[in-house]
Length: 259
Image (cartoon, rainbow, N blue to C red; front, side):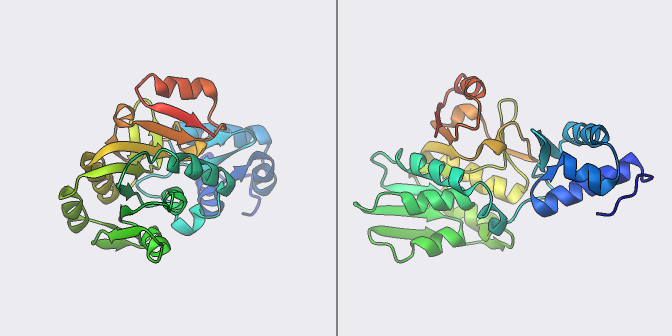
């Protein structure tokens, strides 16, 4: 970005969103210097962008909200919040119980869960994720069933009617589900209607459903709703989600596990 204090607020805000989506986050101090404006001007811009559902503010900055027009790639997700995602995956895998068939959603955290599941007994893993199927293909005690369909370029996951038709024929013991946004008002959301259909069908097919995701998912709302909070058996996230907020989610039904 090049400093240009004369640009309009709308132009400045568009530039901030572009930068956030390209890098994953923005910093107030850095933006003020790059845009040639006061920090308070940047904070005001961030408040406006948060009100419009484009960014979520953090202490000293903001990060982009995934929407119908923007979604991070699997490659990007594999580089952000990785220690937090590994802790969450370990805790989620411990909830397997006596399940013999498991659905593993697309995304990096679900992939980590699949790789962390105990290897001491046979398990059938159903997934729409090429990355997860590839990671498990040669594992002992694993039968991997990859759902067919159109492959999404950014996430390497299958969607559309072929995928949902296969899922509709299964009864699955446990579904590990991800989401782009989780809120008490709007439930679990994702930007792409085709992905929404796969997630919805997986939840319908499963006896138990567990959501696992980082703290930044909470309070965010994306385009398509596929589940209510009350449909979940458990929510696994990190201690970066405040205990008070976790309690509010628990009032809608699921066990909240913070690690």
